[in-house]
Image (tube, rainbow over all chains, first blue to last red; front, side):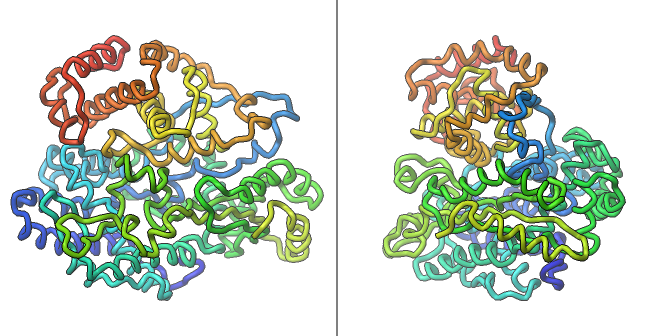
Length: 428
Length: 164
């Protein structure tokens, strides 16, 4: 929904896929020259196909529909169970598969694609590359999924140019020209590309802050995500009820209708819904009236030390219901949400830097640089005096509370609610 | 906690396996148990990739941190219970986890092997009836298990209805 904030950001996933394909072609040509034993022709072609098809399993509006479950606080949680003395029942059910799983499902079940790829065996090989389930060849996996992977190289530049912001302007050609592979098969960039690699990580952080997590875009997205989740829970508008239905859609000709229009139709229908926890969300989107940001608690936090954010969420959990009653809004109009944490390196990662030194889990995610005179690359976080080495133990967290209120005279109410929540959590 | 985190927390409670993020091995245990539960056909909603230590999912890591950082006073999990269907599915695999060693390191190692075998089997990268081919992949990924450990793991998983 970035186009609602940046009107020129209307580029397509198809163009992005072609971009990733092109980058992969350049890299594999080079690597094949360097290490022809590892990069034989069949692997090269599999890699190119994986690059071209890596996003084929994306949902309408991408991550928005895919991650419909991942909400910070559902409306049910706003009524404290202690007070209600009810016991909530949680049942495992087939959730929507992620886009990589769905991608595999599509290329194995859509006959024309399967034929174009060259049969089931090859389709499975290609899917295992973009799904990163291939255990046998770690090198291939690293190439596709390292922090410096083709996907990110393309989308940063493409999104930046389309949105009209300068923050994602990475030095793509210099990075590509300086990729090397070591004798042990480790992929990294040369020492002289250190600045370009560091700038790439900084650009990623800036793009997340300025574009992907922009308060208006994210407000629209959260309204849409909550709307879809509530519609699905209520079995309305013929929305896929679980992962099995999604798989069914993607294995048949219904896939052709599984586009953004699938969600647009739901939003249009929901704008006339009687449910006060659904209609205002839909109207915000159709009327292009973004949910109002009531309060944001954000900052760079040392991992595991984000008391401000926790306190803010706790306040919301225990006080939002009263606030909703006081200002006569439906509790479902409040949207408490947190975009995924951002880190300069290994975004959303789990292990502290000192642990990296002993354990390698996730380590292959890191960008590597060949230090001067060294045949093997080192992670950027292990190179002294790089900005990344200082920042890698910190995460950027955001917690936001919005009010989805499409009514014409909402400004006064929004101002009053903002004043009320000023003291929730505490800022630096 | 969101519904997915509640489900994960209740699942570990049901299996009688306390969640902890204190050490690397304990975090590894959380990862591998979650992976094994999903391989048993109980959909918790996580997607695992293959990393150096076998199947791994960063969302599991995030959720385990979220669950373990809850205030004890609040004890949100105690206000929820698992549905009967999920509970009965978990009961079926519970005996497997009772066979784990007590030592945390040994427990992590065993779970890593079990989770890796099930993942490789599902993704059709190995035929588990052939220990050498399984060993080849494990070794290529830096996992050095003895043949008898691998055979014992396959036997245990087979007995506990993992469809090997």
